Amino acid sequence: EDQVTQSPEALRLQEGESSSLNCSYTVSGLRGLFWYRQDPGKGPEFLFTLYSAGEEKEKERLKATLTKKESFLHITAPKPEDSATYLCAVQAKTRGTPPGGSTLGRLYFGRGTQLTVWP
Amino acid sequence: KAGVTQTPRYLIKTRGQQVTLSCSPISGHRSVSWYQQTPGQGLQFLFEYFSETQRNKGNFPGRFSGRQFSNSRSEMNVSTLELGDSALYLCASSLADRPKSYEQYFGPGTRLTVT
Image (tube, rainbow over all chains, first blue to last red):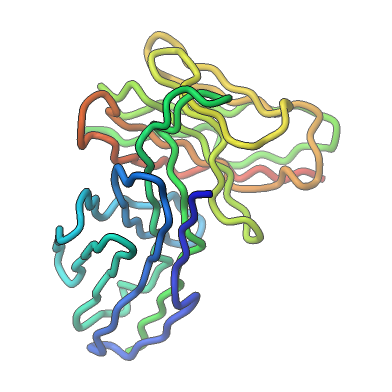
């Protein structure tokens, strides 16, 4: 069964203290891996998509990388406004037409890492 | 470009009632997916619609249903509400019609409380 595991569950950093969040996955054929940021009471905000091992994407203080088994979200010199829950999701390649239809549009989410950055 | 909108933002219902939630996708997006988010289970996939057809369905009981209209707007319905249906219901839209176009953009969600 397709699974996504994120670690750590919670992370507290001092402002400026860089760190990495991990997302490990098992999926039969990766179509894409997605990173989202979610603030309390709001919908997830799209950050990155990674499609193949070795790919990297950057946005401000965030950098996402992908291997064949896991992805990392590196946070460089974080600020208090980076505090949020970071979610990882994977999308599998379609398996044809199983009961319920294809898996094409389905994202499998991890439980997230709750990041707190204090001044 | 306007983002995904969901209405209503908050709902309080009683057990046994039914509820309909609405989602308007980003202009041009033909795929709409629905997710349920709870503290205990995280984000769980409900179903996905593409061009008015349900293309994918998660492991939820038949009380959860949805549909999509010709303008890509989508509704989901939950009948015979149970206390455990209390959750944040999220809608996401995507192009999903060509390689590398499957990013999903989420709306703000509808917070449903069942009493």
